Image (cartoon, rainbow, N blue to C red; front, top):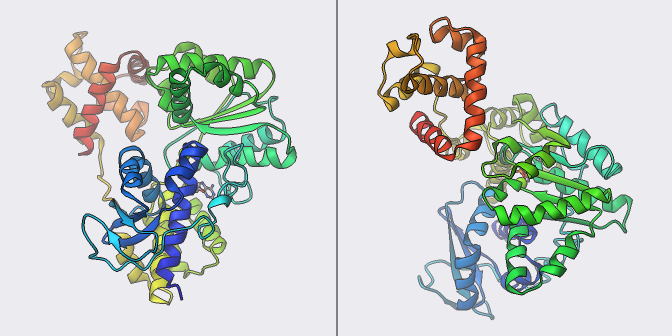
Length: 460
Ligand code: ADP
Ligand code: MG
C-alpha cells in the first residue's frame, strides 16, 4: 500500500513536470524527464531519482534552475535538490551519497505518472489545469479576468494585444493559459500557442544554429492566438526583440490575437526597444495587484474545497492573515498543511498550523519614511539640512528626487505628505521628481542600478 507521503511526492512531481513541460520543447521534455521521480524528501531537500548518470548531469546542468524553481513554487519549504541514480529494478541506488535513505518510491514509468496526459493539448502547450473555472475572481484581479474573458470570446478584436502585468504568483500564467484553453474549447480548430519569452528566445537561437530560421518565422506567423508569458525576459535582448517585432506585426496585421504577461509594465522593462514598447502599450494594459485579506480568504476557501479538504475557520483565517505575498505562496502553505495532515492522519490544530507556517513567513521589515530618508542621506553623504535647502546643486537635488521617488513608489506616501517632509515643497514639485526619476530609470541603467543598491540597503 502506498503511504500518503508517497502519494504526495507523486502529486508534487506531477505538478512540477507540468510546469517544466510548458517551458521546454516536447522532445527534450520526454527525453530527460521520462524516467524521473521524487525518491525522497528530507529536511527540505528533494531527492530526484534518475535512470543514469547521463540524465543526472544533464538535469543538473540544464534544468536545475527550473526544477528547483518549480518545486519551490509548489512547496516553498523546499531548500535544495539532489539527483540520485535509481536503477531500473528500483532496488539498488548507485549514488554519490550511497543510500542513507530508504527509498520507497519507484521511478515513474510513463503510465505511473500519467506521463502522456499532462498536456491534453501538446500542440498549443496548454495545461488543462488552468481554466477560467478554476480561477477565483476578486477585486484585485477582476479587470484582468474580464479582459481575458473578452479576448477568449472575441480574439483579435477588442483588446489587442492584451498585456497583463504584476508581481510573481498573482495568477498571470493561470489567466493567460485560461484564455488559450477557452479559445480552444470554443473553437477547436483555432491555432493557439503558449510559450514563455525565454522559450521564444531559445528557439530563435537554435533556429539560427540549425539554419532553420525560415521555418521558425513561418511557424510563428500562423497562430490565431499567440500567448507570450513573462515578456520581461526580452530585456536587453535586442536581436530577439527585433525578430519578435516582426512576428508581432505580422500576426497583428492579419487580425490575430496576441497576449502578454510581464512582471512589470512595459515602461519599466529595461532595454526594451521603443517600437516594441509602443506596440505593447497600444493595446490593453492591465495590472494585477496582490490580494487583500478578504480576497486571500476567498481564494483559500475555494482551494480548500477544490482539494476536497476541510479546514477550521480559524485556521483559514490565520493562513490568510500571515501569508500575504501572493497566491502561489498561499497554495504552497495550504499544500504543506494538507500534506502534514495526511501524514499525521488527522486534522491539524491551529497551533500545529502556526508551527508549520512559522518557517514560511518571511519577517517583513517595516520600513518607514524616516528610515528611507536616513539611508539616502548616508548613501550620498549629505545631511538633513540639505533636504530643505533652496538649491539647484545636482549633488543635492538628485538624492532629494530619489528620496521622493522611493517614498512614493515603494511606500506609497502621498505627494503632499512628501512635500511637507521636504520643507513645505509644493506637491507638484514632488510629482515632478517622481516622474523625472521614473523616466530617467528607463533610459539610464546606471541610475537604476544605483537606486536598487539603495533599496538593498533600505530593505536589508
Ligand atoms: P504568475 O504567473 O503571476 O507568477 P501563476 O499564474 O503561476 O502566477 O499563479 C500561481 C499559482 O496560484 C498557480 O498555481 C495558480 O493556479 C494559482 N492562482 C493564481 N491566481 C489564482 C486565482 N485567481 N484563482 C485560483 N488560483 C490562482
Ligand atoms: Mg507566470
